[in-house]
Image (cartoon, rainbow, N blue to C red):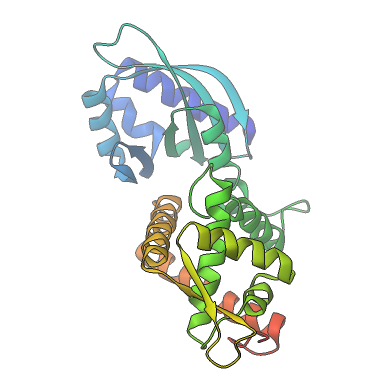
Length: 279
């Protein structure tokens, strides 16, 4: 399978570099996921041929990094018309059958490998005795994106999003305390206090005495916190749209509904009943 994947990607490079519009329709799937300055999207094989004619790009493979049987990251030298020097890029390829069905170009190898690292479990459809189970794929996906809650390289921002989202969710149930946040995040009270103090110092949260018990502090989102969370949610939605660029609307809706069912079941498993955590 890996040999077929490499051969398909090799033909893709040959066609692009030759500007062979007739052959271009035969090296990609009928629907191929690509990206560009305006983001990722799906184009037809005919659209791929038009891209070759329009871009005039030349791509020289430098190194091949298999990520799965049908997913490969290729380091490349790239040159566009009018450029004298070659630039280094990396492209994530997915192959379906003998044709390229995904070609997502990144500015550097690390970004491409990070993105591709979640693809084997999502892309493979053929099972086998050593195939990854659904539970393993789920937890690997969660581990990957739990480190990127707001952006691909900002761990501190991710923790700020985590605690701000927790407070936002808990506010729907009433007054929010430090203990509530600790229980929601599954951490001890001292850890929750540090995270809350940091977010409050950034102006995202406000901590005030409880209206019912002056010995306790309650936590609320500030206007800046609401704006911050809205920006984080936009990034999350954009990431989901990119990851599912090759999906149909029905597939996206079905996956979202399945995730919602998982969240409900998770709440019941963790807290005993959906939507009710320890107070």
